[in-house]
Image 1 (tube, helix red, strand yellow):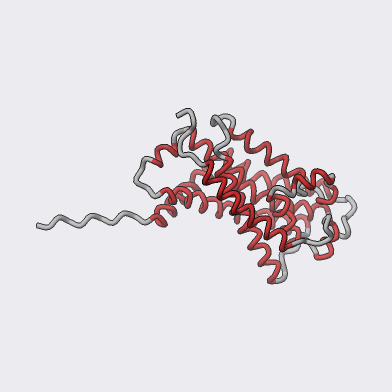
Image 2: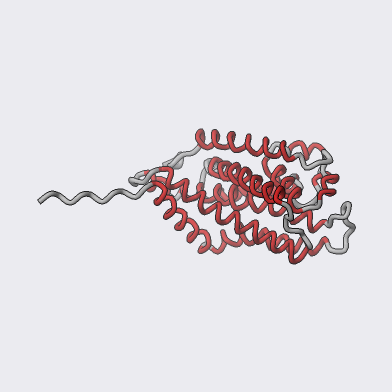
Length: 272
């Protein structure tokens, strides 16, 4: 009798989908991670936005509306850069990456699972912040096709750049215990200088220059172009939204972050 044919191995795409489902279950079941990465931006938006009520408008735009656009950009970076950076560092130091590396699984399936988890959380985060902004602060949903297209490519380019940066920065912590501080602290500093909590024109000039070196500044500017009225572009230091420059900078960050990932990513900790 002929030997039964061996069952075909699952494809890399199928394994990536399974990894993605596993990553999502793990994320939403970890209460601390869920609150800090996913829920905290919406809570901060509600609290800080409420504190802006009654204050003078900026050229007809309220501080809460500016804050909403900024928090959407920060929410994208939180669910990608911060989330992935901390998780990759923890998985490297607890031996998860080492075990996965020794399994007969395509390496791309691991990264595919992370991308699926990040994509779902990023879209959900943006939707949650938009709902809060619309219901509480009179933020207007994009009303034209070009604004929806701008939202799409800023999400795509910003999400890809920050996802790759998160994977790369996950190699920095020398221990699992220090991962949160090493990754979260720079993220918080960049938020304050990138126009998340105030009009970017109010940031000191030398800090504007530093912020322009990072993707978050350009993501928040892109989000302001989507959710604020056209005349609000006068609040920008350049007096316009600079959409072509935003696309160019974020695309450059995608390429640079990919090269950084390829250079720095390790499956095992240095001391293993």
